[in-house]
Length: 240
Ligand SMILES: *Cc1c(COP(=O)(O)O)cnc(C)c1O
Image 1: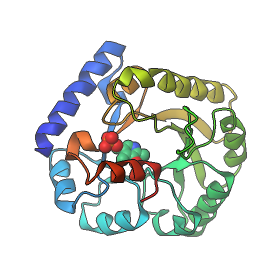
Image 2: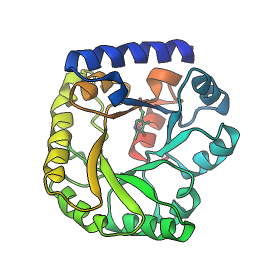
Image 3: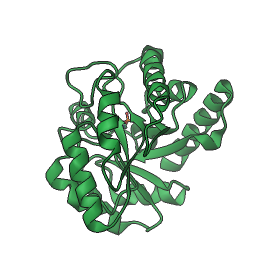
Image 4: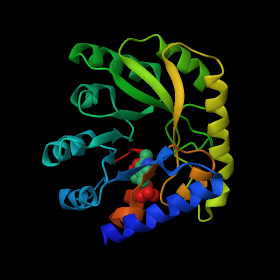
């Protein structure tokens, strides 16, 4: 099942890239494996997936040692400052940085452990009250402030678009995130590049790719439904 799902996702990725005149290798699929057992992740790994996304520290810490060492782990969920130290030297990227205080903690812990960490700034482009992330207006200042911190490197922006039925409804938000990244890149801030756009989930990744996503985060479309709809909503909000 997972293998077939991955094939279907791959086909959509290729079609969307072609439609947008983009290269397939410029888009990376992150398999969002939250709530799923290690056996599911292993199946995806065996089908070639090397990027996995999780949204809870505890779950990451359980899964990382149970799977091969060449996996790139992405922390995509809301991160509490007191938990940064547990994952700082274990993840390839933290997608969900939305405050200076969190970035300072990440920088300090990275320095302590002697690692360099790549992060994304989470932007709440749709202005949804339920979501984490800074507003598009606040993002440039936050980037400036984080840029001077040691051992932490801003690589781009991330957004969680609204839950929708028709992916077209999110096109505008993806365009907005991309424009914001172009604007910030234009400021030529030291230690900042805007090469990564982490946007697009099961319901809308084709549109996100058309609008410039370089990382897409697909869970349900690969692993099937998680327990309840409520759990899905909560986990996306970072509550669980
Ligand atoms: C759960 C989650 C996803 C994946 O959602 P699907 O709709 O299952 O593809 C992507 N990004 C984040 C931040 C998530 O929490």
